[in-house]
Structures are given as structure tokens and as C-alpha cells.
Image (cartoon, rainbow, N blue to C red; front, top):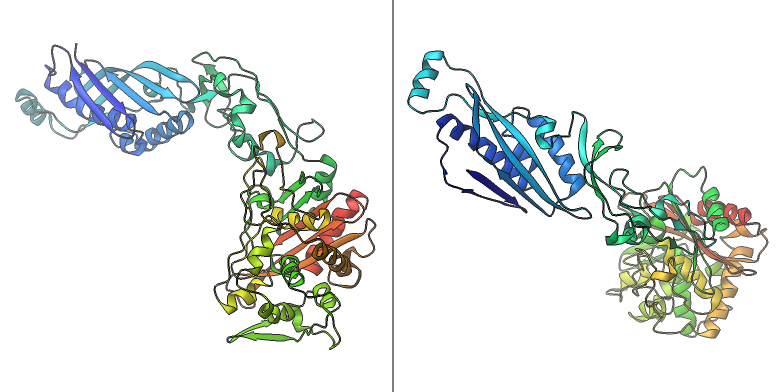
Length: 541
């Protein structure tokens, strides 16, 4: 018997094995060539290349791509047997496919392929070439769904089906968590988590390696399994518990109802860092925890900490002109406001005066902002239980870089989670690394330096004054003694510049710190402020 062996793992290797290596019939020998090329490309996971050897390239490429995408084989071996001439210009070959499929093990099936010769020559020309042993016309593999697998029909594909009962992602009450961008999605065909916590904890939720998946025939349109081709070992998944408080999560979600901008709200328990809410609008990117943005003036909490540690007092006089210039670069306040000559540092913080902070850079070394940010955990490697962006405050490399960094621009970057944690640190008096999945956290990040007690007391005063007499006045009449800081962060190269709207804060009367971000959303006070107010009202204070 003559066998053709094809092994694919990014490349194809083939050889003939057996007694009668050459095909005795010249037509069978000619027909074998495109089939060898087709099977070799299939084994090498090159669907479009394989399809070029068929009579229906688009259909062949589509189905092969679907099968390879669904199964993701790590190795494919195809063994072909001796072909035979079925009719003039038509041959048939048996072959066996064996795949190593993650989650399903080794799967194998037998199939048959027909190879036909295209027409286009006269009978006399054909007879002449055949008598001399030459092939007539071009040989093509006849593509059909059953040729890929004998159980397949048009409109169907091969897929994997979960072998056990998939567990749920839970909130802190032990109920299924309904926050789509946080929880993520599960592939309806394979039953495998494809994003969010469903993907990160797929092994736990599905039962891990014990949960052997079965090979099935599935409808390509709906993904519904039609027929099981192999058996699956049953395994029960384990639920994944989170710190999300459904009451806080719902309040945050409702606060974003009607918001047209891409937006996020994060809420944290300052006493332990537990993430109580993480909402994104729309879904998809988890910008609440992973987004990278210039924080703008909400970063002035950190800058203020550096200035206060250097000896500045809230009651010290602080000039707030319309403009500040640094090596030819002009900085200005929002709407070019200025404060009276007797303004204090508490005033410029509450009203978010950019020009004061830019001019105050002379009080800071190139490392002071970086060092101050460390007390808030910024730039550390946080072990939260999910993917997060933990912020960056580089050492300043120029006077302009430092000037912009004082107001949360230049190379300063943060996520809403980071800025909510900044507010939480002020509330608690020290950094508690945020946590979402407690059981998965191996080692919490600890701030390398502590937040000075006196500095922290002043920050609390400043953030409360921002609500009572400053730019966070949208929260002024709310119960719970809110403390806050607004931010309007420039980004991009448009003129006038586009801006993200921020507000961060915490409740003086309860364990709750939060951050609101409206991406490309305007002003912190005017736009993020009302959203923050709705969030707090939804909580009842």
C-alpha cells in the first residue's frame, strides 16, 4: 500500500511509505499532486493556500479557516492512501486526519477526496497526451463540506463543546455578577472564556484541564452544536468571587445612563482597597481598570502632597494669573480665569489654578513628583486579580516637562482605578492596593513610602474646600461630606485641544472613594461633576 504522510505545525513534511511507491496510472499520479499540496497546506494551517488547489477556493478557505480557528490544533497529521481512477479525468483518494486539539486531546477521522481534471482540449489532443502518459488539463481538488469531515454538511463546521458545567463570576454577595465589560464573554461554540474575568479565570470556571471538551458538528451561523463526534470528560467549574458591591455597581451604571461619551466610574473601599464598582460605557475595553489617560488636574492631589511636604501651607499666599510661560510654552487656566491678589494655596487648589502649579515647579526637584506619587502606590506592580494599568509618573527631564507634570499632563499617565485609589489614600491616610478577586491575590503591592500625616490632613481640608467653595460645587449640597478634585486633561494635537473630564473624591462619612472619567468629555467641573453627583445620589448620599 502506498501512503502519503503530511504533518503540520506551521510547516508541512510529507513522504511516501510502502511497497508500490509510484502510482502506476499516470492520471492518478497527476491527480495526486494538487491533493498533496492541498493537504500539506491544510496540515500547516494555511487555509487560503490550501483553498487555491480546489475548484471552489472561497468556500474551501472559509470552511478551513472556521475549523482551524475553532479547534486551534497544535499539530495536524494527514495520512493519505492509494488513489484510484474513478472515471476519465477523475480520481479519488482516501486520507486520515489526526489533530492535537487543546482541551480535547487527539481527535482523528477518515475522509475521501475527489480530484478532477479541467477540460479545455479536443478529444484528439487529450488522447494523444494520455497515450504518451501526459496529463490533460489542470487537476483540482473537488471541495465539499464532507471532504473536510464526512459528518459535515453545507453551512456546518467543526467546533469544541465544553465538557462540564461552567461556574459563574460572583459579586461580594455571592450572586452572579452582571457587569458585562468586567465579567467578559464566553465563546458560544467552544464554551471558552474570550475576554474579561471569563478569559482570565477560564480554567477555574470551566473545571480546568479536567474539563475535556468534545468535538462537535456545529451550525456556522448560530454556533449551536448539532452532533457530538467525540465524548467529553465532565468536570465542574468553581465560581470566582469578586469584591463588587451590586448596590454600588448599579448606582454607578445608572449614573452613566444617557452619557454619550466613552466613560468609566470606579469605586473603592478606602479601608481595604476592595473595588466596589467598575463600570464602563460602552462595554468592550475595560477603561475603568486598564485605560491609560493623562489625569490632568486631579493629579494636583499628588502635586499638592509634594508641595506641602516641602513646607507650603494651605493659608500661604498663592498668585494665580491668567497665564504662565515656560521656555516659550504658554500655560493658562480654564477659560483664562485669575484669582485675587490675596488668594491662598487653598484657593488655587479649590479652583484648580493651573498657572500657580506651573509656577510652583521651582519648589520641586526633578524627582519630587515621582517620589510623592509613590506614597499613593502609583507606578507599582499591583496584584489586583485582573489586568490593570497602575500609572506612571516619570522623573522630570526638562523644565517644561516638570511644568506640565505638575498639572497632570506631559508624560503622567493614570487609569480611573489609579485616581480612585489616590482619593482612597487621602481618605484612609495610607495606600491600600486595590483588589478585585481576593482569592487570586498572592502579594499586594505596598507603597515604598508613607503619606505624611500632616500632609494628609491638609489634603483632606483642600479636597473638602474644593466641594464647598471650588470647582467641585456640583457635590456641594449632597450629604455624606464629599471631598473631591476636578480635572480637565488635554490630549491630542487638535486646536483648541480636546479634553478628558475627570472628578475624583471620597465620602467623609463612609468608606467610599471614587473616580469619574468622561473620555473626550469636556470639563471636570461642568461635565464630570454632574455624573459624580448622580452616582452619589443613587447611593443615597
